[in-house]
Length: 276
Image: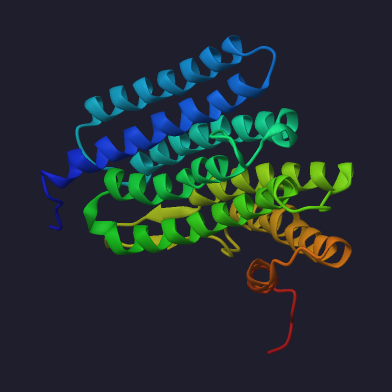
């Protein structure tokens, strides 16, 4: 049976918890630095992040091992979803309340914020390697990397908003800015929910149920990913490129590929084509 080093696993958890706590504290510090409520928001946010870290620690101590079955993997998906909700709330507050107050010359500026946002995809890859049985290592790594790319996709959308603080005469219209923030947050949720579509089977492989005609939840979640992530991201990027001259050709190509693949999977599952 595949195992992991007894030395590397504790080290991995040390880095995971360290990244998580640093991210939570610093995201709340952005609110503390740039809002009038200051200490109340900071301590409420930090308290929620620490309470979640404590809950994860308790579950890890009780379980004493990896997730080896699909039922155990559901606990992993639920905890990740709770984390991403906390992350999404922090993103919504920062981008809704203080994003235009950030100055690139300050410590708590746009560049530092981008670094903290990018901690989430790194945490996803690291944590899934730590909590799911080593027998599924290759499949889990592939799955987590693709999910991390989707998270980076949403973060790159938010970077468009941040670039208003760095590029002269680059100012988005209010509705466009709000749409970018809203769809980025929705994409974080959809990506996290999509993780639950992956099933651990008895042959030590991960089976993705997306596109499975026998699983309507998987089909409709795939459709939501198309309608609420790839389509709006593609449309917004093309609009911002055309109207403001802000280029994002790599992620436009990524959205087009994801959109085509998603539509093909959906059409095959629902037998939209009757050709034989």
